[in-house]
Image (tube, rainbow, N blue to C red; front, side):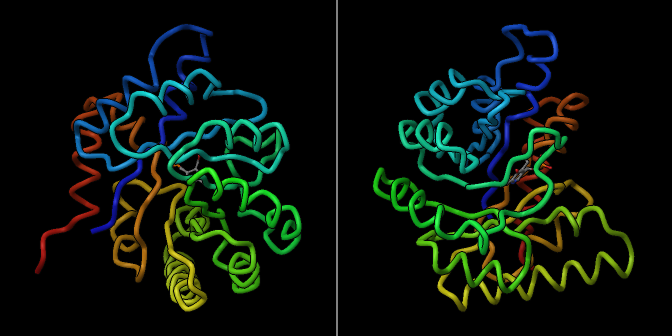
Length: 240
Ligand code: PXP
């Protein structure tokens, strides 16, 4: 069974749109857990456009499952990540003008920095994953970084249609096999929704999916409980 980690960033996006105190990403996370989420993910961006420092502290203190903190390699963010003592960390690229995380981390180019950062996070008890495109060079570098996991970027798959989507799925499958052969554990995420998630669940070696936007969007119509339960059912399909 593939675990569902619910990303609560966009609950905070709604709150920050009005600089209000509600809706609370923490309350939403607790409701997601009651509906079956096996972990909660958030991204503390340098520009603080959605999740705030206090949200991270409150999530860490109050959720019953596991906190996966997405963080860039910016020194101040890494210091905050270390202090959070999250259960897991996902290191991501960050560009201030992007609408959302656009590509995977350049693990090849950032390997020296990763060799400093990853051990600091492992030392405080975190599992560390690197958000990577399904690319053999990036995976080889990830295996050199000390990270235990990669999170395969499913954005290109999600954005593609027809034969192009089938080709992206094949790239993900090859990357999952390659990562496993290199001794890396495999998560995946970005752009996944109710319509495109099923083939990702069936990829080899995938342990956890990080899903945010589609769940928050669905919950506007059905509520968080139904939205998360519907996704959980897709992640653990009944045996044939
Ligand atoms: N994984 C990573 C590393 C991400 O940066 C994001 C977006 O914050 C997600 C997963 C979730 O993507 P989405 O909101 O499209 O489900």
